[in-house]
Image (cartoon, rainbow, N blue to C red; front, side):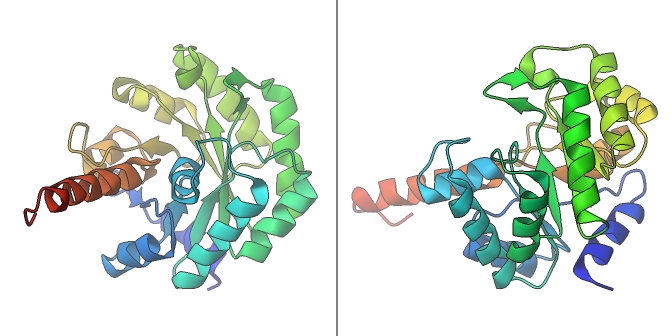
Length: 244
């Protein structure tokens, strides 16, 4: 199978309690570590990649993001999906072309910009153009930002999800959804559901999230921030003349 076919198959093979876990590398070295640990696929988080390049989240120039994704793809032999934020204002056809050139097999696309939710129907039309341009060469993960933009009603997330699935999205990502509403979202959303997991042990385990309805789990910049904290502690010990 091609890498994108493998990536799609990983989503279909999941069962309740056994979701697809997608670590979020931010550079080639972290990607290799994840694969060495047994990860079958990866999903880059834009915030973590931004931090590795010296930018705040949402401020990375498109050229640098695509280049970073390409370096990660070259470093590993597993499928890599890329967080493309809101698409950087790039037309769908060019966005798809640049993603395929980078070697990515999928993309994460947000439905808010500068902290404001986009019109869901207009965004669905844009996603449909991405789908048309990509054919079956990209796995499109449509992020639903209602919960992180102050709209707490699960019904609003389900409504947006339905539009995005109808537009051709392969998976829907209701980021920030409270864990207790995941079963409701799962019952109301057709197709795979991406859930945000934690890496610090203060939230449900991947298997528990799978039981609640997650098809796949991503971690945003959680891994990079945990790694940065570990490095900070090592540096502090060394600066004090003490071995960590």
